Length: 129
Ligand code: HEM
Image 1 (cartoon, helix red, strand yellow):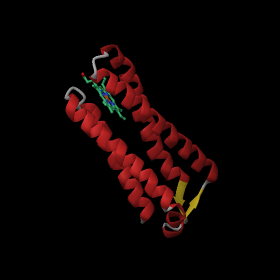
Image 2 (cartoon, protein in one colour):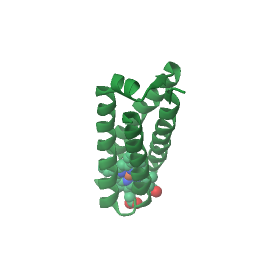
Image 3 (cartoon, rainbow, N blue to C red):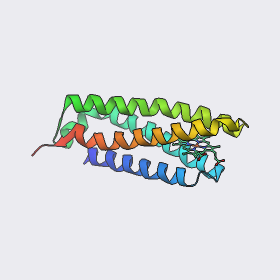
Image 4 (cartoon, rainbow, N blue to C red):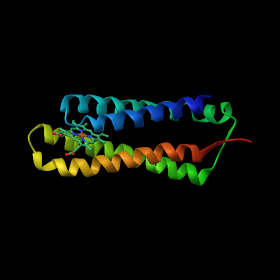
């Protein structure tokens, strides 16, 4: 149950980010949605870290350690990319318009990494049959 709750939150974050990209022309709304999604994601990571063993027990799940390592590595990379997004986004807002292209490429890469984090979470923790 707990693991599904985390995965549901993870799905909401992905959907929120896709919506945030869709409204990028409305800068204020874009920044609000993306900031909210990134903060929620960090809170989700903290929830997972604080209840890791509980999740495994409560969900009666088995972990696949290689898949879990891959999942965690992609998740860590995603958070590193959040740093680049904040940095390039703030630079565009303060007038450095040349960074838009970089922000766009990094933005789609971050989105892809976040989707991969979501997908590999199912692969890393599979329910016992
Ligand atoms: C995971 C986080 C984020 C993602 C995936 C993301 C993604 C994107 C994408 C795909 C665009 C469209 C670029 C284009 O077509 O030219 C964009 C535009 C933009 N983003 Fe972000 N972004 C994120 C976070 C942020 C943050 C934190 C800020 C500000 C602090 C920001 C500020 C902007 C600005 C100012 C634009 C240009 C809007 C315009 O004039 O059209 N973004 N972003």
